[in-house]
Length: 400
Ligand SMILES: *Cc1c(COP(=O)(O)O)cnc(C)c1O
Image (cartoon, rainbow, N blue to C red; front, side, top):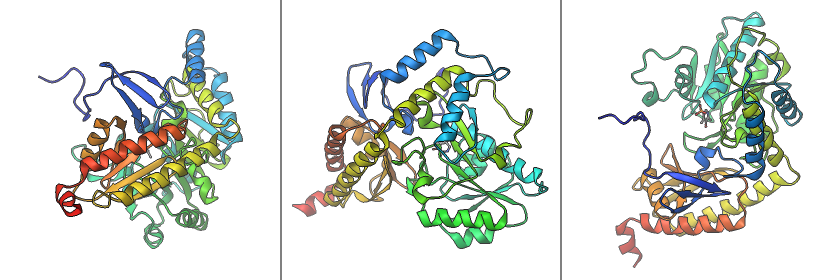
């Protein structure tokens, strides 16, 4: 018989009842080091007192009023995002896919309002992940996600990631914008070349296109800067965010320049509870932590320590690990073809470490941003034992 909870996930047989910092405990008392952060989402760890207090206090006052009224918590949060980003204006929603939907609608609206309703197509990239709504599975373009759901939503053209010639060749009279993750997350923790990002900016300016960045996974400090595109020294026209911005509370956002945002007039787009007082209390609390003096420098420092540790791990286990890639605290261990990322994820869990599989046979490591040296050292030890578990027996024999 079908379980009451729909069977659309491959869940590990672990149920957590409590978390503190980077650690979580199962209902049967086992402790795990959480280097997955619920898919790069528990950005400031579990049970962070500042976040817990903000949510509890706001819940007791008023959780939801709808966007029929002013929401002071949302006004504050938007103003803070504007002060700390390229954006002039912010729209709140509830998830990454929704933020991307809003972002693509904003791009199309901009072109239509500027006399180009025929420009509605987005150039997207192979290996992308933009979410699971009907339009976003088309933007993602992965045949596996599209199958069985009818004709893909029109308007998304895919080119190889990092291939500027292919991008230029794909730009046509119907192109509205370019949509890219600065680091492909689900697709395999694949960072875009910073030069490639700059060239995309140039091409957008040349052809009157909008640069739309999906920073759902890379944003809110995960890269060591507040937004990953800051490493490239460029500014998008519009950007989506979600995952880490609510610290585990569902919250998404579309951040935009004025020339884009001004066209989203009343009636063009909206949500019932996007940016409600409770979600924005969470968003403000996360921002308090991430924007605190020295916090992002600390993320960058600990990320480099983790990176060097993973590089050393790769060196010690060449029969299991092909290489390490990523940015900041969004890192990927690319495994040899003989070892699957699913097996690696299970082996790591058996050693007490939570990780997340990503595409291209990559094991993703995305700890909460609040980790310190001790957590990095503990994770590296667990990963070392994990890799020993995964070492093919032939290699063991050869090594003797
Ligand atoms: C997770 C993710 C999404 C989808 O976010 P949901 O909250 O699951 O809808 C979109 N884009 C990127 C880059 C993501 O990592």
